[in-house]
Length: 389
Image 1: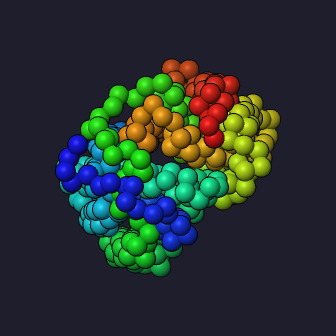
Image 2: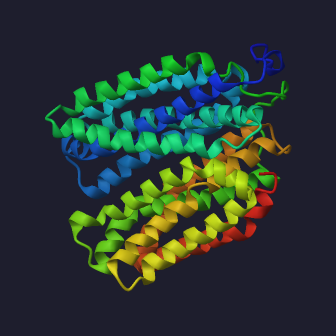
């Protein structure tokens, strides 16, 4: 092992300060990620490309995340969550304004890749910290942490939209976002863990995902695929299948996002009362039911309600799986979380494209039914992955 590795056993268990810092970092990630959404039309106009070419550009964000995530587990083990989180946040604060000024295809591609890599790095580091902080607390906290990510998303998208509506330029709006990210980092600094593993002083540089970790990663892939399907295709589906007006079609995702945020904020109490296994089974079943309702609903309100059910069902499945990843013994937890996060994000990256392929050759309804089958599979096999949750 490298001589710069940090011996976590020298540190006392985390407490309330570390808990609040973890919440702040999840808020940072959600805020930064969602701030990009209102900037998309401006970026597309600056580079002057059609929808197809712009869609390829957007892949750079996901690819940046996918490439950075596996490395983050190693970096956190060797340098600690504090250093990795701080570096990722500083780079993220610098990358956000680049998204507002990039005016060529190459510049936007590089900016998106940098943005995606920093978000991916932060995502893994904060979940590694969250697993250790939750374990030290002796109570369920993971859903609440992820709930702050959802809250950050609401503030990020809504806040930037409001700033732009007041006439502020995209660049100045991103400066405000960057300042908020850095302020939150400073406020959380003392509570960020200086280590990345609690009991694993001999963490190897790489371990191939296997056993329970591979299963958890696959199930997270299916859940994230469902989230990506709602994000990218719900509006188009509502317009084509249910005759919803274009100006109202976005409320499908809005209901999904609000339901997910509420579900996660109350999720820790639900997990404590019901247990992680029941949460996964009921969540997967509810998500599958939601997609089926959206497809077969005889009225528009019921179709919208379907996406609300998907949000409620999916809200706490991934937090339960992260808790299980922190308790399994097949892999060092930092590497396990990095692997699971990478596989999950692959669902967001690859899934919507696959659904688009199905929609082109058959129908979006068929794609949604396949996603529903995937969530039913999560409900059936989830107890194996979450048995320690």
